Image 1: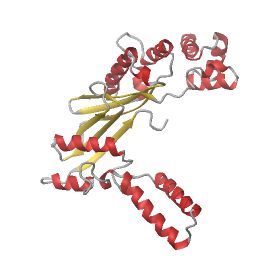
Image 2: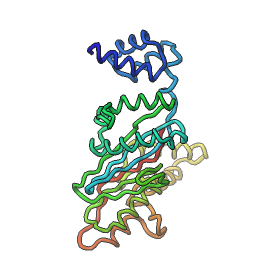
Image 3: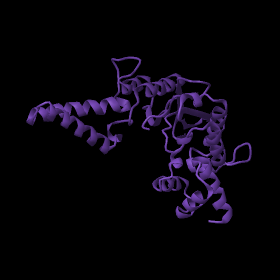
Image 4: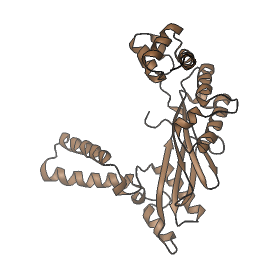
Length: 285
């Protein structure tokens, strides 16, 4: 690491933590320039200020969509409070990041190293914004949908401005030119929060974890043997149906599943959901 890079990283660490130059320099050198590891290093050394901003919980913020020429990108940017999520400086920063996210095809590392309109990197602007506002701010996750393989549709729930809200869902569907259907499926995803498209797509560890919980509940209730086994199978099948998009009850008609709606709307070829994402601000933090 060059002296220039060392000084840049020390400056970043000082702005994030409030710790003195000497301690920050030691932390950076010990951790090969890694900011997050350096913060952890300072905390372990007992320098309380190191946890001043970066150890706090940032579970508020915004989800932003940028769409152009049939391609769509979404990014979640978090703050600690909803008050900051409404701050003009934060909002302007988020809007510019949303455009950069689209141009970077949803690559977080590419976003962070990109230049913003003021000529500084996203990382440098982020640190300046944290220093100015006084809250932890993070660019948490993103996803990009290109135009290959299907048509993309999106929905923004609780919108604060156009394409900016608290829940964003995007879905890619093939053999479908019906915009109304695409947007309704995106709306369904936002409301119902599926974990996968179909049963075969649901991760084994998710099913195993749920089964473990079901069996523990049955054991605690006194159910044993064949009865417990029968009940657990029924419960896990319901869990799978409730959490896979094609098997969920259609939010606009409780007598039908999403798969029924796709079959009704098809003309010649089968309509297939290729991919989807649902981002709810702060979920999982």
